[in-house]
Image 1 (cartoon, helix red, strand yellow):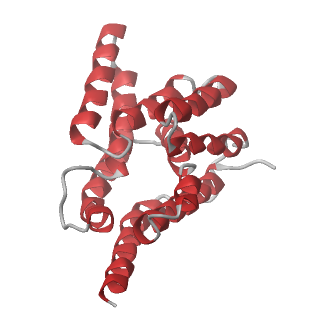
Image 2 (image 1 turned 90 degrees about the vertical axis):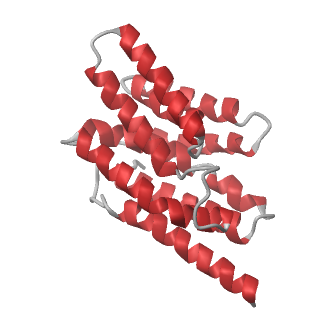
Length: 216
């Protein structure tokens, strides 16, 4: 069996939804969160694929940046119970910074500028406190740099899960590896805007359910 990017997106979306259902509605049921660790590595892998297949990287970044802003209130409501909380920003910011880094590296003329850009983008993710922070952008960078060597790329991604979550739940992100190993390089049916819309909408729905349960 082989998987195209469409199928990988659905695996990532489904496991993300399970993770968020657990985080918002069943915070003490860790199995939801364990399953959810699969989602982020797949999204990072697909964001790199999307970068290399897009016709316009700047529009790609603008789309990610726009939905990062639109998703922040739903994210804060679902996970913080507040209209706006700057202590942590949603994953679209992480993905945006990852694409920005790839874009800059593709345009940069020498290794010293590239090194400076890597440091600055990682620092920006840390300062902004994006979801997965600088380590999330680092995973995108790993998939980007090692893209030509699939086996090494996937092993490095698996290692990231252990190093990021040593002794913690993120170690279970290694179970994304079998799905990524089955990737056949094909796009499949397009659902370009589905995830962009699904992300803030499902967070608002989860917040509404949580609010209803709390009030009853």
